[in-house]
Amino acid sequence: MSLILQFKDVKRDDIINLGERLFLFTELVNNKIQIPNSFIITNEALHKFLIETGLNNQITELVENSGYSKEELESLSLKIQDLILNAEFPNSLLNDIKTAYDNMVIHNDIFKSASIQTIDFIRAGRSSPYLVVRPFLKNNKYIESIDNIKGIDSLVEAIKRVFILYFNKDTISSDNINDLNLIIQKMVNPDKSALISLTSNEIIINACFGTSEIMKTNEVLYDTYVLDKDSLQLKEYKINKQEFMLFRDENLLRTVKRNLYMRGEEQKLNYNEIDKLIEILYKLRELANNEYKFEFAFENNRIYLINIDPIEEPKENIEEIPNFSNAFQSLENTKFNENTENSINGDSFYSGKVSGNVKILKSLEDISKVINNDIIVCRFVKPEFIGAIEKASAIISDSDISSEIQDLIKVPCLINTNNATQLLNDNDYVTVDADSGLISKTEKTEAKKDTEIPFRLDIKIDENTNVEALLEKIRKIKWFLKDN
Image (tube, rainbow, N blue to C red; front, side, top):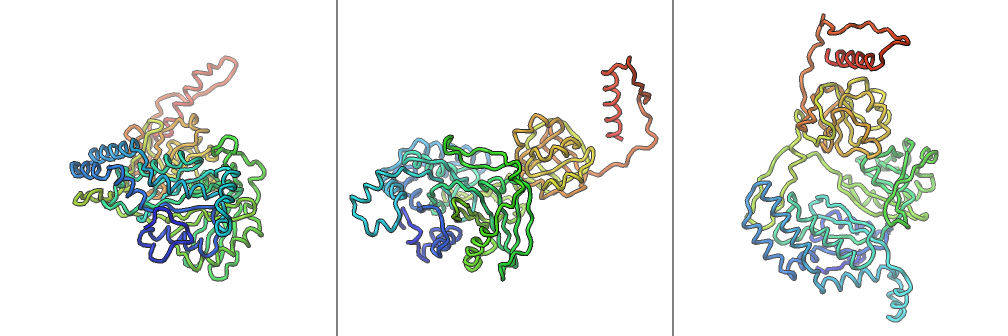
């Protein structure tokens, strides 16, 4: 298979090498769904990189001498990553990639009619675009994209970084290295973004201002539009206030945050934009299925398909024992599966131990259900939840905490649990031990009756009141009521 592949040149037989997800991407493009200027670096690149640098034999030897423990696997992946980092990128790969990169500034139609001199003149007069590298694994495992790339040297380093990420301790592929393909894509700076999912009878569109990352992490509230899958008629929609957006600052050359204020209350997609999306949905409905989520970017009145992500299915709690009968046998990520319904692990953010009732927070509407001493559970702790945080006796988060409110967290708090929001339900009674990083379901004990109050309740406030003594008594009352 060719090292570099243009979307228009992909054939039906290429699905074996590209995998279903990337092949679907090319099929949509070849059915006139617009994408930013892009090309594919096939799985042949990693194979050639390992062969021509001599790393293939070194890695095979390392794998054959490795054991089965997690510690040995982690050590193995670090050694492989270090070998890749220090390897010189082969010129045979570099030249092919550089040619494809240089040609990104020129439209395909120009190549068909212009002379070599004209093409060289156009290249010289146009600056190279900023790029994003999107990894596509045939087994649909996730490797993060790398963006804000400009220049062939930066592109080569980004490709090597993807190779390094590929050889992590949880994902070591088969010995023929046929799993990893890359899309090299011109970056867009979207005014708006949309994530589209297909179900058996509906099409769901989530939309926000700016880039889509804040929808994927649920950092903001976004709009939702539901269409009938057969008629493509808009059935219902919900407009939410978006507090901020992310966009690429052309001066800083990185993604930055901008507060939206009143604009955040506006409908994210106007009806003209929805009509344009519906034209795309006719093709999407015929070619795609409900296993993927489709990411679109709106820039300068154009709509681009920029990515396709698999919709993750719940995984069974089965720990597979790695088998090194073949070099680089793939390994399952076990951290996610270690969590069960009755025992969940996380990283300690603020120490302490407490028990209480769970309240799941998915949106601002859920804040009203939180009462004093509840334990709040959310995917991402963000400023909008401050009203619930002030009432909570503990906090559990699937991911990290927004830097804007980290200093406000003064109760037991566990982060990076990955799936606590899926394993827990409202009003579950749990114990959060932030010292050991463990959350466990427990039986709620009945409130003690006729408990003797270990202090006097008389509180008199006048000009002679000792404020510190008063605050100490209030703290004692609070903790007494909490424990009883």
